[in-house]
Length: 171
Image 1 (spheres, rainbow, N blue to C red):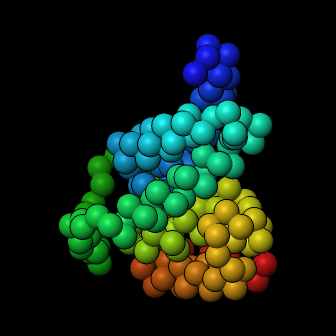
Image 2: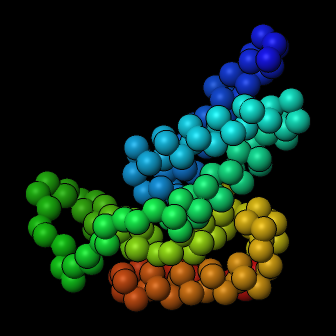
C-alpha cells in the first residue's frame, strides 16, 4: 500500500475513531472488549481501504455489529448472574439514583442477546431508522421491529425502574 492510502486511513481513524469506539463500547459492554472489537474492524477496513475509502464509516460500523453478534455466537462465556438487589454504594451524591439507574441499564443491556443489543444500539444510540438498522444488520424491517420490542420488554422486566424511561415505538 502506498503512503497516500496509509495517510488517508490514519486520517479517518484520527477523525472518527472516538465515535467508533463509543459504538464498540455500547456493543461490547466494556473498554477492553470495545478496543478489541474496533481494532479488528479497522484491520478489516484497512485491508479493503482502496474500495471503501469514500464510504468507510458505514463499512466499519457494519463490521462492528456483525463481528459482535458473530463473536457471541461462537464464544462460550461465563453466564452472568443477575441479582435482585444491588449492594449499597458509598458516595453516590445527589445524582446517585441516575448513576444507579445507568448501571442497572448497562447490566440489563449486557444480559440481552447480541442481536437485540445491536438493534437497540443502532436505533437509540446511533439514532438510525428501522430501515437503516435493517439494512446495516442485513435483516428485514420486521425483524428489527420485533427485536426492538422484545429487547425493550426484557429491559422493563430486568429493570422495572426504567419503565417510565422506555418508549415503545413502531418505526
